[in-house]
Image 1 (cartoon, one colour):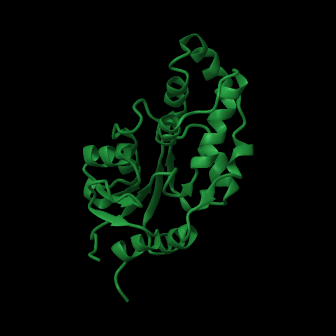
Image 2: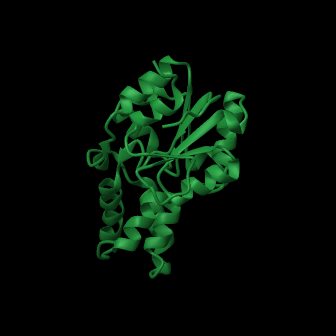
Length: 212
């Protein structure tokens, strides 16, 4: 495996990279549909809510019930996500990777389309202490795949686009990284055109850290 040189910050997506959170998301959005007397989401809807913002997701899963969208959005905003966090599974090797990168002086960040749920998730898994900055959909005017999230993080660290790498798992992640012209590592998705593909988070350390 080759190396990516000159990197000063590693930026992560949340869902699908830090966590296997698909079941948690499915349960969350199905609970909203159930509240309004609707059946569970279909496969296409499950895939959609996994990578889009909460607002976009509710609009999509209620697209056939336009008269309910506004009320569903208000209901979603008041929901407590905490009961759903237990369905999330932290990816193997995550804390070890973060500890190694932190020790070596890398800046660590998250750029996610999650909204007000990212904070409780990081607290639940004791991960907030690792990250210098977390950008959610509430912190930008333009969500992924727009590169605003990455631009904010680059500005925070005071680095150029070629001094950062973004780790993602979806086409939305790839498109954002490409628009920002930062290195892109695809996690568990070989279908994406990426600078590097990894199947295990600890492989990222092999890409960034000097060999012993």
